[in-house]
Length: 272
Image (cartoon, rainbow, N blue to C red; front, side, top):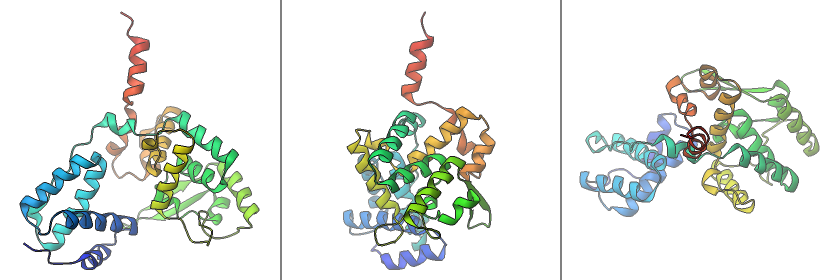
């Protein structure tokens, strides 16, 4: 079976379903990758595509790309070609999260050496639990309120709180920039940063400051927020609300420990 719709048609299909710009870009990227590997759409090629993803990418990335491609198959009316997600291992998932020591070190070095904006990018991500798409929506006006309200596609309002210390320092930063209204995180031309640009720049600073780049990406700081929150205040239901999880089971991942933490505990506890 030949490809019957092009990328633009698929984009329109996704836009009709009210998906975010970042999600649409990700799903289109999955289709582009498939088309670069296989000239036609067949059940065998789709299975090969899944195998290719598993061989070349991490499980989370594999599932993201499979999800996008499965949407494409739905748009063609070919659900029988859809591929199952790969199973994520809890340990490796948490091992790829920045440690609290590295998080604090990165903040401290960015504050000392700058640019100041990237110090606040890291602090906002780590202290609010915001997704990178949500980070980009923070405005100077939210600092006086101490929170930002977001409305989901289902009409549910999620409130992202900004800790008081962060509010005060960010407000002083805005004053130095003479920014009274508008988005906090913009480039030199005043255009909001992109999720891809933030991820790339965080990797750049990770390499500069000798922090494992595999643990430095926007969502890693959301995980760090969740882990730190539970260690200070063990209320998983509240954390689920703060993170915008519809099911508290999604949040239970943060009750587990990384393999490194498990090793330290075993070394300390098992002395017999």
